[in-house]
Length: 594
Ligand SMILES: Cc1cc2nc3c(=O)[nH]c(=O)nc-3n(C[C@H](O)[C@H](O)[C@H](O)COP(=O)(O)OP(=O)(O)OC[C@H]3O[C@@H](n4cnc5c(N)ncnc54)[C@H](O)[C@@H]3O)c2cc1C
Image 1 (cartoon, rainbow, N blue to C red):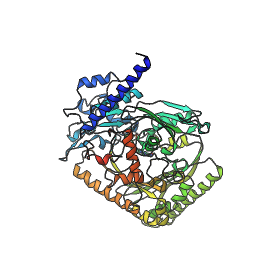
Image 2: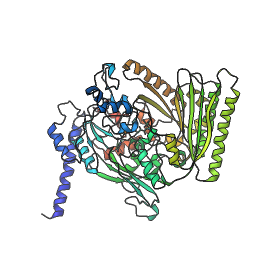
Image 3: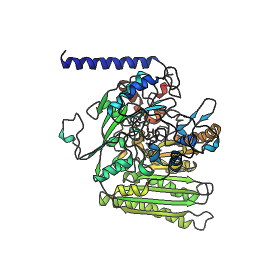
Image 4: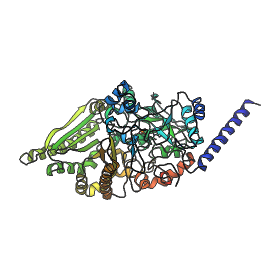
């Protein structure tokens, strides 16, 4: 038989095999979970292992060494680095927010593996995947995906585990761990695959493997004199090419250069049929559209992403830190925030991006701002600096006028500072430090520009009634200049002036009753913010598990198109995540089709 005929037969066989496996997957209404009779045996896993570049992973809870061997160095390390995001990303069984490692049974019992071993709770696997593939190549991902489809397994795609809705694990699930896909390639010029026009050659671009984290991406870009639009967290442990991007990806640079999804040139992705697709504006443009905002863990496993980059630039940083000796905002603090809300559209139009948060404690309340503007053009930077300086002076005047009151506004810092480069700013303001390893849930709403402009006082008043919320100015400006249908992202982002985030937290060992009481508070505060602009939406990556209408909140008018594209590329619905596209067709545990 000629070689070409043999290859043809092989391809036909592979397609038939994939279709048959897909059919088997569809036949069962429920996913096969660890412990079910349908769960593959050691023989099947051994067979899978022969196709992989690395041994299979058996993820365990990060505190487990403290139960099996309390004096071990592994336990000492877990205690020392429990709140370190980068350490957590290296643990196959760790999520960044420990609550997503736990599992709550219908009778209210919580299975967990608490760091505090004195709570008397035995260490359990909780929601942590039981077995997985340490993907280092496209073929590793393909083998994992085919195995999951063949055995109808619940698949968890896990990168860094930062997801605020726990989408990167799942009780009894099989995991693809993308963490070690660490390749980084800087391109002096980049032409998307399938492009025939030299006009489409981008001067600077960078390709990041799916496991690259922001601190690695920033360092590599900086070494080549480049800057990327990326996220912010202590030590930069969030993934640069996984859920952050596919959910939207906000950055302090977004008002200047758009969101993560506005800066992608190309994806390399493995779909549930096991196909490897390079997608961009020319190849599979529907998938390219959907991957830019349709949510992580939904359309396939992204193996790498190519972003456009920009030559390094100096920045101006703005810092404000004020506090009062009371747990609720007084008049001066309320005025300081209300004025910030009023000028937010102007600030973001001028390119100011960043974060502002209220941090309450029992006897004090602090409010802080960290913002940045690229100082590329002297003229625009001077104008933007004047706007921010006027605001900081306004707050200082409020403080000066409150000195005689019983609760004066105390200013710890109020300044703008020129900094030589964006990278220097990032390292100065987001050094590694304890930030995760806690139990947190959040709620989100995108505040439209027109609502802010029509009644900034009402917006501020409602927000000030919520303890400990954040006002992220990561929308507006360049984000609003992108056409609403250019990407799959929720159009609400294009109309937003700011992203509002609220949260709750609880200690290890809290009962379900205690946690649910806090959840009720979160639901009610998110509802108050939502009521200010019900037609808007929420940020898929920083939202609550209790959005009343997730399809509307996260995808708005793009939902139907995203659902249709998912049917094309994921016909067996292998990729289902909490509140993601098509998740409404599954039960709450995402195990059985409704
Ligand atoms: C401390 C902290 C700081 C944050 N800062 C920011 C910020 O500055 N800006 C911002 O926009 N958001 C921020 N976030 C939210 C962040 O965008 C989400 O947590 C996001 O889900 C993280 O993506 P990940 O891939 O790192 O994490 P993971 O939890 O591993 O994955 C998140 C989701 O993406 C899916 N996924 C991961 N990799 C792939 C892949 N290769 N292919 C397909 N699906 C994949 C997973 O299945 C899961 O559904 C922050 C979160 C935390 C906890």
